[in-house]
Length: 248
Image 1: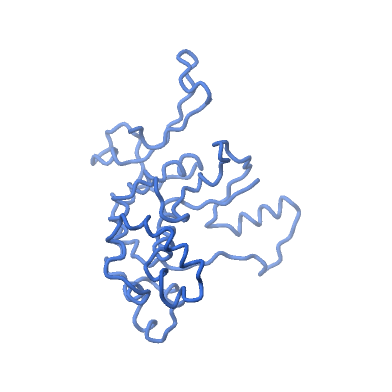
Image 2: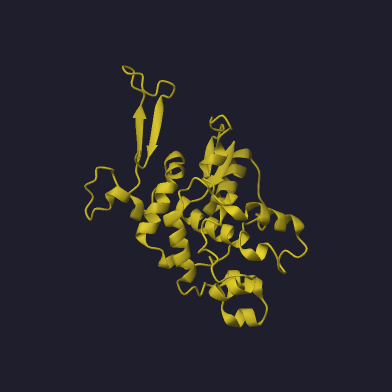
């Protein structure tokens, strides 16, 4: 069994961006969902999950209100709304600041959309046992991964036959996200970084000794593996225990 995973911090940016769009008030009524009753029902059934973050959609009631915050007017004036996702966002900081406020308030325990779930949570059975995965590939470089799979199986993938995932720009300006916000995200995603053995972004790194220059080590993420103690029998059922970040 194989799987593809993404770098957790970048995935969180994209996941939030998609979840934000999917749970906006324009999904309850308006042109986007006029002929999509199931989408409207999904929005109504899950709206309570974003009600605890009232600032997220403040001042937005329609999709046009939202688009004006990230899409250039020359594109909107021509009605080419899909092209909004192909150009850099014009976010003046409004959307980025709401993202940062959400990260401050969010615990990671109650995602309001499936896109915000941890990747590692999809790789275990309901009992907590891991899937029998033999190889983990980087989804950002999926083509190389699939070519490797094909090579190992003796299969040729013809040129032009590889299906690529969609590539869209983010609606909020990631460049305005502070280092402190990034470290909070890394702490929430520590299980993904540790369990999937993905290198931490430099801004999130620390060794856990509390002595990092600048005092940021208290916010840093690190992974520690603790062996079963054969004398006290602590962690008796597990040969190794992963401690992502630090225990509360």
